[in-house]
Image (cartoon, rainbow, N blue to C red; front, top):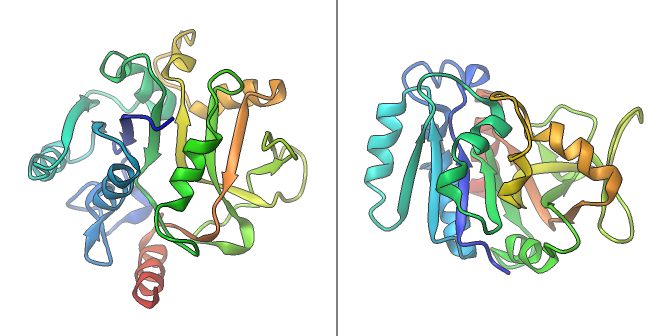
Length: 238
């Protein structure tokens, strides 16, 4: 099943990306001649997304102006100018715009190169997705094929593709790449306005309700100017 609606998280302040974000949102920082948000929009559109809900906060007017130029896509704005709501709160605020069917959800600080033909990773995520068996399916990268990420790894995966958080382990082999498929209903029972999706995932994982697909390729987390420059160099090599 290929979700038709995508929620793109573009409301962050981008403080680690300064000075590149002194006059623009992080979503409009360019890598390889294309803005981060256009990298993600193009990826998801190629995977089958037809409608995009995008939250805005920092430099919201500038981001909205950029998005209006994307006349090829059906884009709806979820306005978070008044307050930052984190990932879960952002999804909750956009809830009425997202509908009841499973959706894509994506950060904007992720670019990647696939070893297999382009688009295979997102198709594999769609193939894995089974709403009867899971509530969330994450796209993952091996630690050794990750750049711009200074953590110790996010997840372990079992033989059924179910995920377990690193927890107290010193390291884990897989990193979340910032793209997943989810049931939008996972936020419905949360009373808080500001919260992280990770809070919900930590409740779902022990129940076997979070699964993942490991991409065969190189993932670049674009979180600061150095990471941006390195990602640009890697994309140039191909």
